[in-house]
Length: 129
Image 1: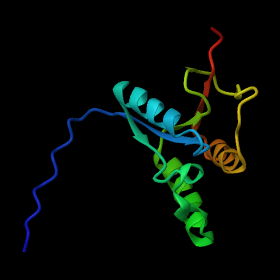
Image 2: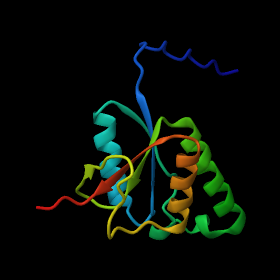
Image 3: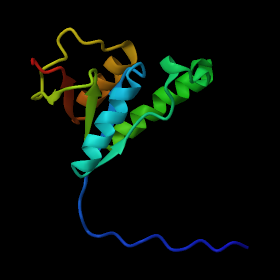
């Protein structure tokens, strides 16, 4: 029998938990935002597969339904969601949308769910340079 080592004790710090939402077309943006939020002291929950970039398993009917439901559970676990659209950006105040940005059906459903259960929602928007 293999013995598992005990998990480390919590440091007592309370890190904000953020679930990333957005089209899986934007893998690079997911990775950039995940890195930035992690370095800002957030626990980041993301997608496990990028269907629009080659993870074909996503498109099987039962798998797609499971992943969509699983993402709602990830939103349940989070303090807030972060909607991804662009590589360079800034946080927008609650209620502002990604003007001109792509937000697909799944992401719209995730935003509506987050709003319904009272989660804070942040958006990534291109900066004017």
